[in-house]
Image (cartoon, rainbow, N blue to C red; front, side, top):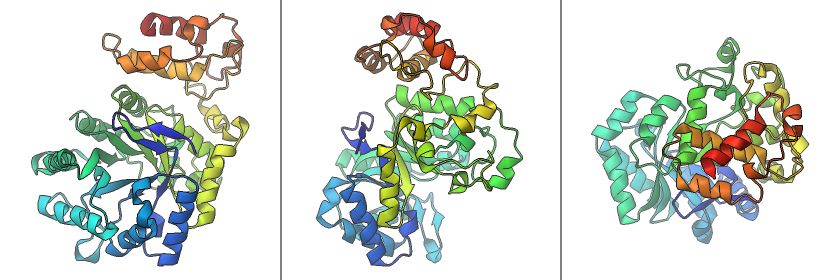
Length: 380
């Protein structure tokens, strides 16, 4: 397994995480099989947003004495009042369900307390004004949660939540189709509606959100990696091409700020299929056949696809471009950590010999040589 640091929290996440939504309503033996397989595969990142007591208890029982080995994203505001899945912005209700989550799991702490479903300005204003953010901060101060997170599908609203300065982690819906969806569109619409949209390029608002997260050390965990399975089907994908799980996972993991993809599983076999990504070749992970139809609109922008490799002096060109993109967000206030990460590279922009091999291979005519020079100017 590979792990990435979760911002400044001191925790590290497995790049393949486990989404547990599909365990809801399943018998205990299915839950146990899936959780045990995740543990055997050294998955340590688990998202649990479902409010039902049965699935929470089953997951807690399946974890047993391995609770300490996993990082649980538990959501503040996910409820099932009147036995119907819903969300609440009422502080007392949120407290009751979150405390119930710990009781159901048989634990006295949750690793990441998630501000649930921040998809509208109204939702943000409610958690701000109703004391829910203060409640999360109090839990963190007391050590009941180790970090504060949020979940969202809307890049504009997500940015508002992040700019409060209280969030350590964001769970966000990321895949190629969603990334090409303008922020005013609801990505949770059906894929049939998405097909009617005019795909232009990776939406700059979403791209800026990812860069902001890496700049501010806010980790991203990814939901909807496969677009609810639609991207794996040529018939149902808006691209009219089927992506593989490895391509979808790799696309998500190459976005700035991303530390883990939360893959929904309901069997040991599905867990192993997700983890098989780690053994795939660079060719098998390559998602360029999906983006190639839009390359005219992506001209000049690095999408971190690594088609420029190999570099004769071993520069990780995509990673240098990623750090450079973050530095360009505010050249007067470049985070010291970005400079440190850049300077820690075995080879960086200063080692570029301007051979042009990368620019010849780049599908998007990125000015790589100039970018390497600019990285030296901004990052040292």
